[in-house]
Image (spheres, rainbow, N blue to C red):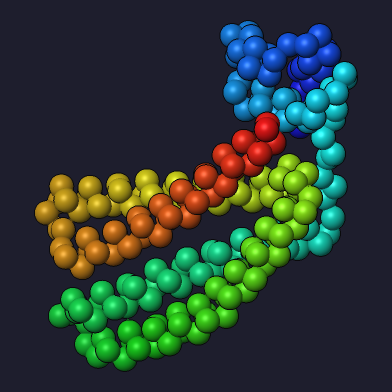
Length: 213
């Protein structure tokens, strides 16, 4: 939620006829962060009226919390098991000579990962589509606290995975332990985490743009 003083300033500025671009510029020059300014501006609609028109605030319900928790939970399950499935294919293509009967181990892992994906991914898509339709009918849900918290948590996890993956890859390179199998696994982790990070970063930026139109 935006600072009360900032909200008051934005409201008075809009009342006086100042443009959003000018309000944003002077607030940033005054030391307010871009996110704080955009949050305050987003509290008021762009509807043309003689006084600033407040946007409706999202009301968090138990149903909303349930839907977001299920969606992100299924996302984590899907990402993990998709990575595990690719890992097993890499292990079969480039087996470790020190591990005996690797085919049996890989087979069990492939069956478990496939079973998890066949359940978790459709659930993720179904819940995500329901949430998207709900947001389309009620744009105020873009400001949902649980949506923002879980999205930023996911961005944080993905960023940590990407950084850890790069550190591990660089360490193996410097120690001379870099193998084709290791490189492929590192690329797998980096691509999955990067895809999740990129999509949800774009999603948050799209929310900010939609709220300030």
